[in-house]
Length: 231
Image (cartoon, rainbow, N blue to C red; front, side, top):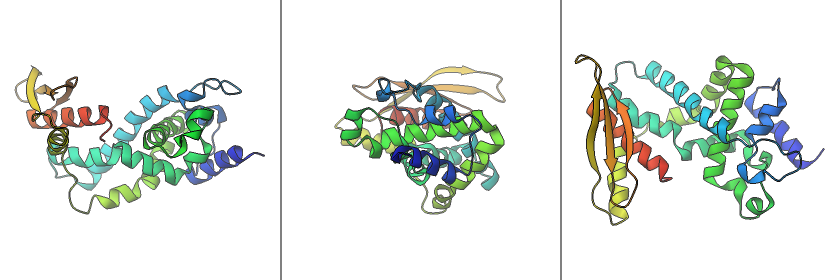
């Protein structure tokens, strides 16, 4: 058995989930750079897309359990702290994903197994694979186990909110302050949904929805930061 096969088995052990369909696990560990590798396994980009939503759902559920009296605006920065790229990369390391990844030779030589973006994407893909293989309950159990340290950290000083983080990042880049504008408001007066666009000079604007303008602004700031690799 080769080193990578051993590493894949170690991932399953750490996940405490034995895959009924091992192909799903292989796909979740296959980076897009590996298209030319032997076996030609499909890469993990679609699973990464699904896993982002799966993780967001479980994080929101757990936050609602832990902070039932908190307004949505207070929960948003905590959610961002749980699902951002840094946290997902940390969880990927706890999963032992680095040695198990299928990467191109060039990506491996440039340290791809330790790159935060690759690890975070693989973490999301693995969570999607567990969800598809074992259902929501199986994926939720893995999430609650592996994200426990991230939830513990929420008891420490409150995470910086996304609007403040975006403002400081923009200033650090020598750009003017971000501007926010409501581009849509829909739904009944008692329960409207706002769509807000945030713009930073020299960057493509980002949009997000929220049940209040404040929440939508926070989410839009978080979306722009994620797109620029700052979350």
